[in-house]
Amino acid sequence: MIVERAAVLLAEHGIDTARADAEWIVAHVCGVKRSELLARNEDIDDAAVWPLVERRTAREPLAYVLGEWGFRRLTLRCDSRALVPRPETEAVVERCLELLRRVDRPRVLDVGTGSGAIALALADELPSAQVVATDASADAVALARENAQMTGLQVEFVHGDLRRGLPPGPFDLVVSNPPYVQPEEIESLEPEVRDWEPREALLDDGQTQALAHRALDVLRSGAPLVLEAHA
Ligand SMILES: C[S@@+](CC[C@H](N)C(=O)[O-])C[C@H]1O[C@@H](n2cnc3c(N)ncnc32)[C@H](O)[C@@H]1O
Image (cartoon, rainbow, N blue to C red; front, side, top):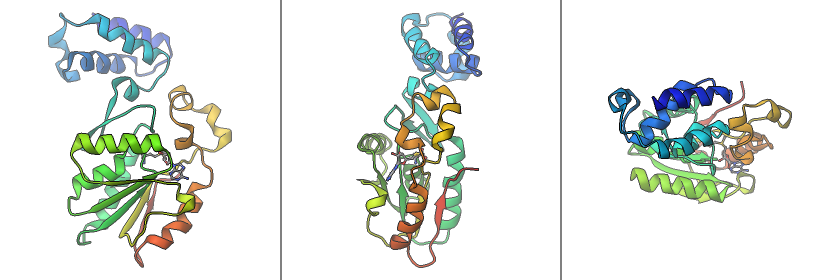
């Protein structure tokens, strides 16, 4: 079966999740859920599967190979213009929702939005919120806008470097998953991250510190800053 053959090849290229990745790729090509794959043992378009498996053997992240990735209740377009949204960032959204539970029609700012994951999840799960999101990468902003269009969610995306200032407040909450990889750590990262994800999304260049200062200019008095940080 093609899943087994793909899994063997992926394992030979050092991918720990070879079997699962093979199933994701074949299910994606077939347009079915992974759980429905068994029923589709025949009539699988091998020619469409192998180019994707080959991309994965080069250690391209599975999310880029599939072109989409799940984040909370959303399926987002995903490619090398932005970081792959991580499961731990879903907990950041959870924290924001808790903090905003009693705020009427909150204004929220997501700094370094990447694919738009945090901003769009908040717009989705807290429809009364007015969400603004910003990123220094024009490519990331373009991807985030595509994701807004695809999901039908309203977020105002602004292209800009946080070190030059943030969109005008006041905001009831500022949230960010800033780059937090130290330059000396980069070589020890998995190839999927080191070789494929945008360096400007990874490398700590003082953004967290700058944001801590800048956020004070735009937060309503006493309002929270929620940051994903290096453990
Ligand atoms: C770790 S990624 C987070 C992406 C997304 N929020 C997520 O959680 O998946 C950090 C993002 O910050 C952006 N960024 C880096 N430096 C920045 C700066 N000086 N000003 C604004 N955004 C910046 C990067 O382009 C990248 O999209």
